[in-house]
Amino acid sequence: MLHAFVPRETTAGESRVAATPETVEKLIGLGLSVTVEAGAGAGAHIDDEAFTASGATLASDASTAWSEADLVLTVRGVDDQQAHRLKQGTTLIGLLSPSEGAQTAALLAQRQVTSLALELLPRVTRAQSMDALSSQASIAGYKAVLLAAGRLAKYFPLLMTAAGTVKPARVVVMGAGVAGLQAIATAKRLGAVVEVSDIRPAVEEEVKSLGGRFIELPMVESGEGKGGYAKQMGEDFLVRQREIVQEHLAAADVAITTAQIPGRKAPTLITREMVESMRRGAVIVDLAVEQGGNCELSQLGEEVLHQGVVILGPENLAATMSEDASNLYARNILAVLRELVEEGKIEIDPDNDVLVPMLWTHGGEVTHGPTAEKLAAAGAAAQGD
Image (cartoon, rainbow, N blue to C red; front, side):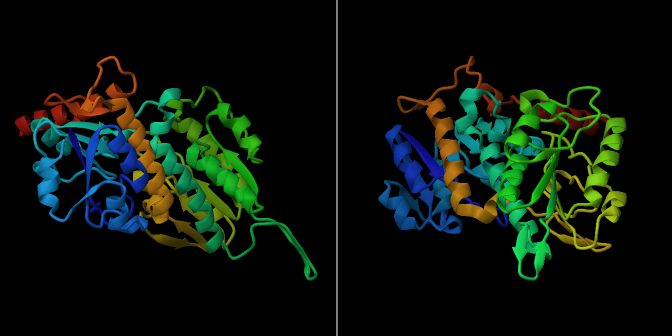
């Protein structure tokens, strides 16, 4: 019988958990035994008794649980110490940051660990239930609007009062991916006027269906990238985009930026000059700050005040809504395991168009091309020294 382990997350500020009592019951139904580290669900307000009631075993000695597991389910991956605890042949699943952790990948490969990074999941229809990036981005988009509303010194909705009319807040959302669309919907529910900028013309209908106004850009080429993501555009286009969007930002009360490109630094959409053109009291929420930021002045985890404009760079927003974030994330993991586990065994069909692209390490090798290239380049540089 496969033995799955769900550890308590150790990354600072990480309150999510990779399984819930609901999914533990279903994992057991797949033929797995499940061990949960004591306190693993505390950040998501799930007590140990709820896990044991669902059929899980509680581990008070985490080091033993790590070394005995056939399958480890995480939110934020593993550090080197945890990687060393894994026995050979273990399978690891989580948000493993494949664009950043090349040395961790090398260590996992050395230990014959099969690791599946949820960030590498292909965006195909049958993989939607496994898409952890989307489930967590939706939460971030929602929470970003609430942060902006809480920090803005005025109402979001139009109000007719005995003292006169209060005009609705004007919100500019930059990037209409999953986070952006949820931000649009939430801002509209709060009564704001919402304008949206995106380099992919195909999202215009979705924006309008949510009540947003699409900002037209001079498209010489499509901004549609692989898997539905936006692609990196040339500097000439970005300059023209900023010129057009600046006119809308100057009249905005709130700007929410969400533009990210997998494996690359986030594009700069709001420059210092654009910030300085905004009105005093305006609020910017930069959801791309963990990838370098869409706003030139944003700082990770900090609130910056620049010429009266408040710039928020929230870190790991999904974890601030840990209950629903954990519920959704755990279901994403469950969906992956339904694809991965057959008759109580882990099976990776080399023709599986969902699982194979997710492989970060497998069979003693780093199987993710970009990570392998980074390791090769680092090795060549070391030999040159």
